[in-house]
Image (cartoon, rainbow, N blue to C red; front, side):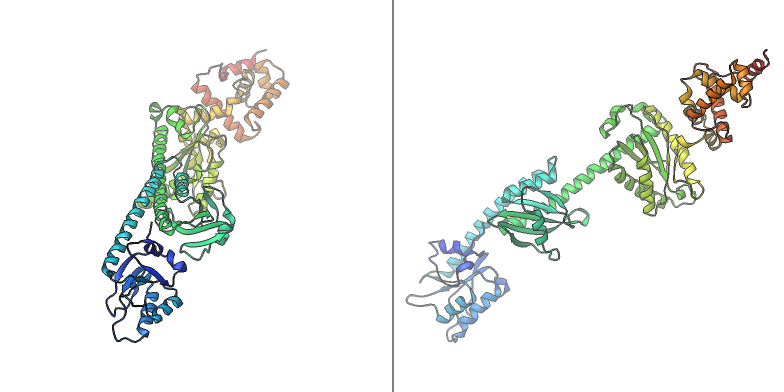
Length: 538
């Protein structure tokens, strides 16, 4: 603990006596003691020091003693110790001045050595400082240990509250409560804080003795930290260094979290890049994505996001890399706020998302936010898949959809979905047989459980959309054909009287028929020659 003037008076070996200016000043800290040379006037260098003097030079007038006291008061001295000889009294002028100015005036006993008193006081101060430093070191070590705790911020504040026996409150600059370790009138305390005063503040709220300090947070953010204690105030000698320690440790905690987040982001990116590569799934299983919240065999989709200029060959590579990093960082923060399991990476010059969710709203939100930041992004979304080996296909679908989104006419949506493509779109946009087959299968998937509808649809197309010719070929009533074609339209989601639907269904049937070599179990198909013979049959 710091040595006070009251502690000095309690030392019997000093033998000093308080003569004037005591009261509240007895609780003032004594930083040390020094002997004033004869005629020397106190200066700012003597702040908080106990000044030992044998008086003013002989022959000086009575005002000399008064001026000495006034100078000591201005310098912020802890007090004056006046040596008196046997039978000598402290000058009345000095006593009156000390009483008037509230400066403690002490007397040393006759024969006492001022230098001896100085050395003894300084030795006591050094011993007190050492005890304080040892205590602070113990307390700071306890605070430092909180950094490695799971809830590091909460643990740090709770330990601080424990060592100073106070409720610790942490506020955002706008008054929102970040943390509190106990009870206390948090709203009232916040209103009492002078937000324009950046120095440490002390005030009282009911029975609560409050200390409020503005501290710097990570990345130049600021926060208010408050220590609130019932009835008795917290000592400044403990508060100041501990708050400084907490301020530094909060920075360390923020840096640790940022490093951990960056490490996890790199791990997530590595997993995603391997999944969307042609052979990545061979090295990965569901255990590789389970730590990120993914549920085995639940539907996932891949989205690819880019800016139009990224596809231009003349784009500055450095600018592309900068924008790619910026967009990737923004999207990581956005999807992290969603509840859906996700991975984010940048690969092949675009930002790629893998999301496990039933809808694609998060992609629309990401594109909207990027556009709000003057990044005119577009996105392509691949089909939903439920196995890791199919994620690469969803990625290819997303890249195809992204190409359409980047080259869309004005007014068209910035987000294109592969599932919205017609088979003709895929045939025109790419020569990839796998994508053609997958989109064709998607179109006809709902009819795979009804062989009669698939067969009727196939014959209907072969007979140039003639109800009667189809009925003759299948040996059924025309109304049965009409019913089956109506059901096919319901399952397809389009009218077979519209040219776009007719072209799409015809291409899908042909693609599936070729891929499956006319398997009746999957897609009944009749060669044109067989259909013609059936029409000619009596």
